[in-house]
Length: 409
Image 1 (cartoon, helix red, strand yellow):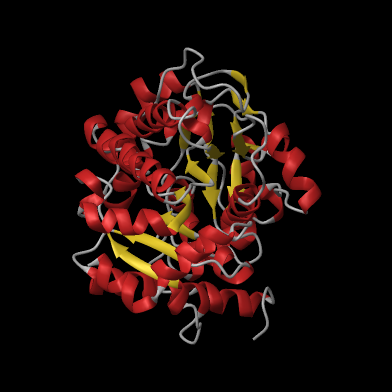
Image 2: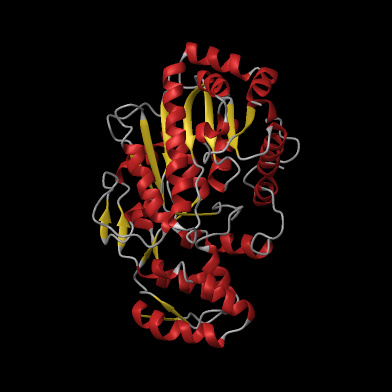
């Protein structure tokens, strides 16, 4: 359990010493979601750019399995001879369980060593039932907030950083600012609603904890390599398009599609989480904003890359009532499956929301951190997806970065 892991690694004692000494690198960072796409990229930045010790809470049956999962993540990020294992404490935990599945003594020892929390873990499934999504995204966040309060009492908490989503805007039409949350919007799926409710919960702790909220839009692979371990959201309809599943789609060519590369989001989280608290400005849109693409532009890019005719765009109501049932009925095999899987994404082909990211840009651009229009790196995303057969083949980040020249061989 935690006692043995902390004692063996000497992390608790070192963390408590760092907390007492203070400074930007004080204490241990507690990170959830470290085995997911964004979480592992955040982990990489702390290991590459600081001397911080990182506690990774991971779902596992015991410490040995937790360590195996974290070691596999480190190998994916850095290769087998990475040398970072001694700075990462893998703790088996469950954000769905009371007390995170840790006993009171273990939680207390952990809280005494932690000065910063970044909560990335979440369900990003559009198809989970609402109550199941709430159990992970809302109740799980509540348990992390409770741990953050214990950190504050035990040794001092510098910041609780929560990764939300720009899609808390739901069905809102028009500009959605970084200060807005409740604007009378509806929601397209349980994911959006549960993340909205989770952010409401996080905001309710503002008077008790130093809160920071990040709202990324659709996260895709790295700009330079296309590397990703997650082929959700944009990738599912892209894969269906590549296989000729679409003759028509419900949507508007002008509908905005806000996409950001994971390296931009991870750089932004690292930069903002390490800045001094900023007078109540605690919510940041990590989005393309004015550089967002559109449904029509993405169809054109896809048609060019895969050498296929773009599907016809129809009014969403007409498509859903008349054409889609007919296409599903008359399709077979992989094409029918692709159409079925695409149903969750169809509402995003006709959105009318644009995200204001002026606050984020005000802090990030002077630090040299800016997003890039997807038109400039679409081919890298598609190349990586095709080369790895849409995630079926293993492709470590370290290998891809060496091949692209992003790091020395």
